[in-house]
Each structure stands twice: as structure tokens, then as C-alpha cells.
Length: 91
Image (cartoon, rainbow, N blue to C red; front, side):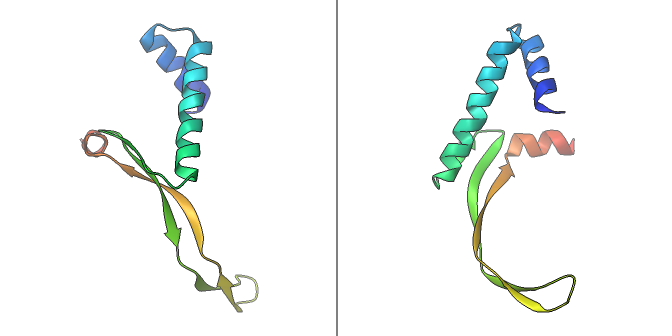
């Protein structure tokens, strides 16, 4: 499912115009992105949590040459599914 299909389904289920649903979904995503980018955690009870995770610097290998290379430390976004989400998927 892509964003357009999500908007259409939510609009149909909530009996709202697609334009309104698209605006709300876009703003929810933007707010989550901004909050996590600022280093804060976003928790949606029953759904899951979005947070920043830090990856340590490490040594890797260049796949073409096989030479060792240093991979710098970085921060990546992460999602952890909530209990209800996990239970629904595993059912």
C-alpha cells in the first residue's frame, strides 16, 4: 500500500474528503519526522515508537576491492512495533 492508497482507504472509512485526509496524514508524518530528527521519541500507544538510534563507527570492507575501510558513526531512524500491532500481525 502506498500513501495514495492509504489516503483513499482512510477517507472511505472515515467518510471524509481525500484532500482533508491527505493533509492530516502528511502533517502527521512531518511531525513525526521533525520530532525524531530533534532527538525525541514518538510513542503511539498500541501502534509503536519512532526514535533515533546511534550506530557506532566500525570497520567494513570495500566490496569491489576487499580493502578495509572505516565506516563513520551515524544516527538512523528506527521503529519498534507496539504490543497490539505485534499481536495483530502474528495472529
